[in-house]
Length: 235
Length: 254
Image (cartoon, rainbow over all chains, first blue to last red; front, side):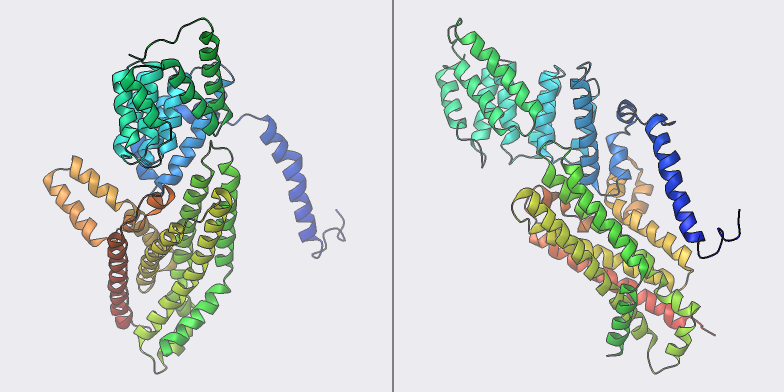
């Protein structure tokens, strides 16, 4: 190598050029192609997620941020499995971790319960999660509302649905249709109309395509049955 | 007057420090990145921006408090400028208080900038102001005042490296003290419980200053709790500074 090339004034330029050359010639292609040794795929990250209690300590009081990180992992997990095998064996653990870290994260209860019911088929898990949410957030209408909806639509337990709609009715900010549902449940009429209205409300307020898809699927089912079936009494 | 002059000088020195800008740039990048990260959530944009923004402010503020705080006294000794200062008609406590106030002003500026950035981003995402964010940042600032006082206390008798390690340890214990007390109440025997309770009462409880969760979820924040936390924070800072002054006054600089 000539002395002129290694002149002190040129060394910084050469070092930077070499660094950029290595970055885009070696580091980036290797990162793109070679699998990570530690197995840092989505499934591994989900399976190796520490217990919620350990995460609470490790997050040094930044519980909200830790909950957000696990929530983002949960979203990736749901998205990954919705597009593949539609099996959600770790979903309950993920959502429970989120709500242990941030007990006031209302959407984690409601969306988590929705996916547990309609994607994982775990209605008992969904109810347990929502009941936990009600205990942690007694002033929020969304969670008892979803409990009422689950009892009404999935379990056809109209007595419990009525109880949770009544709880929702007493809370500030509840949707305008709740008193009407309470009345209908007392009058024991209009099951299909109530179900349709609940799903339509969910479709309108959905913040993601996944939720909208579930609502549209259930609306289509109910509207498909409308022509043939006579509206059954609510109780 | 002398304290004010030292404070102003410390503030000027700190705002010229590259460490401050490096940490501030990283903090602002992280706060800005929270907006991108938030788009990956389902309808949780506002929550993620606020959570990450408040956490970044608190964490990077702590880094600033530690890295600048540990050098306040030791740098003066290293550069031998302290010898010139102590030879002048100035009390040592005035020097220490001036240093502390100067760094606190620097922190106020940086934490203020970060808090305004978070509040602005949250407004852009949510479409409405969340004034509670500024209150949460103010309480975080009180916690940072304690961390700064701890850093200064250690820097009066220890090396910068050890001071940084000790201050970081106190920060970690302070953030966890509430949880540790809870664990001890549930699982420990009576002896250990008393030890933990004693440590909880003496060591700084930084979890007292965390109202981020209530603010992010729009839950009410009790004014009495804020007042109690502020009083506790200021009293704790005073205790730390008095201990630091006691040690610094007795230190032999020959």
